[in-house]
Length: 72
Image 1 (tube, rainbow, N blue to C red):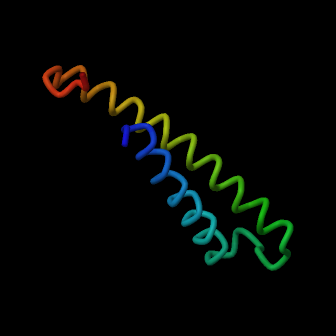
Image 2: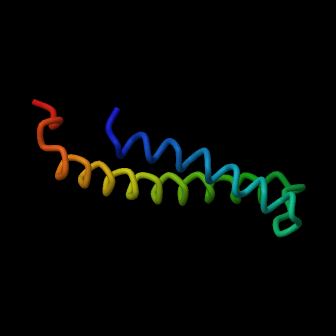
């Protein structure tokens, strides 16, 4: 797996966790199915994009500092 896909998958999980934590703290109301799916979907998308960008940047930095580990 690449750093980008690893970061994106971690971001998706963290996005779901953040939405559920916000619901537990009372900032979101997930009692309505439509609103709950929209909030979870937004958390998944935002978390995945942010995690993917961070993973991509860290992967580029790692390959720059460790040129011997570059894939053939």
